[in-house]
Image 1: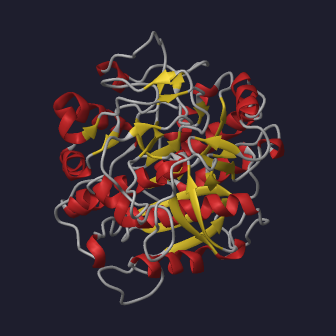
Image 2: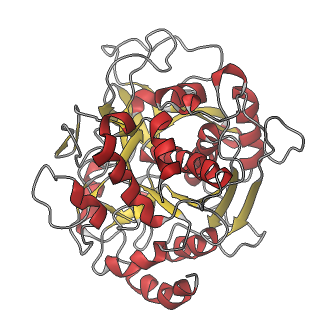
Length: 440
């Protein structure tokens, strides 16, 4: 199966330069002016300014929450003793991860899944302090430290390589450092026992990121990609890049509501949109109430040549669409439920959000299911298991997913059932993970 990469990578790169120059990207340009914007009641800024993007490059889908938008906004909740923003316990509780049976327990109500599974994170440029920062994050929140023998209940491994698997790291970029830190820390928060392989591309060009992808899926069972670019003509020819056996590919759907981006639109990739979780008025962490669509969540009907996957034929698009609809699923990605991310080189903790958060959290969920499948003597999930998520929808929707029915993302509205803002919705992992374990 791996020989296909050498056969099609050259052809894929020949058309990849269309990223950043498409009509979709032109729309992103308008929606993302340089500097901060008001996102709900928050002032926020993207980790990479749109003005810095170049043709042939992709962009990370993460934002930093700066401050309340105005004095008229609701009072910011009193933070707990520690960093502001959502903590691992908030996300594990929100999605039932600490209620999954069979997982070892950690202090403070956390559970530790994913043992024996490797999650590859593909990003651009170098985060020089990534391991030290990940271990500081782990100490703060009671998670197992990486590359530390004898820890309880597991000793997960962290590895950082360049796009060809070598030790020479690429250049530093402060925006991508935030993205990398978000990705590694929040895979670890969801699946604390999973190994993490960080593959750093030489630049944010699609050429280099696809080369990094080629290395990543040869050494992992789950691949997380929190970046994307506009659709391009002939993009369906690149679907074969996401067909390594027993590997699940996951991509963020974007940070501009109503816009479809690649690679999340590939029929072989699990596309993840974003929501806002309810916030406690006293702690600033998880509150009570409804989860809603985030207005920046990317999604819609393909404008290029991506066919409708057979898995999606079990759903009904809310509007006419003859091709691939995205996202497939969602998780927290909005500013209300921004998470704590530690970046020592830039001063400490940030509050970060975007579908770049939802993506690695889903990677952690898949790693948990893979680990339990492995323990049961089954193979790990593969790219075709997108069908199993839609099967979970048809067989027991309310048990496996929270249907997000309010909120808008661009021109897309969250409605009952599948929609272009949040897909199937967010996971109820205490039921969904066992369902994925039982999948063929």
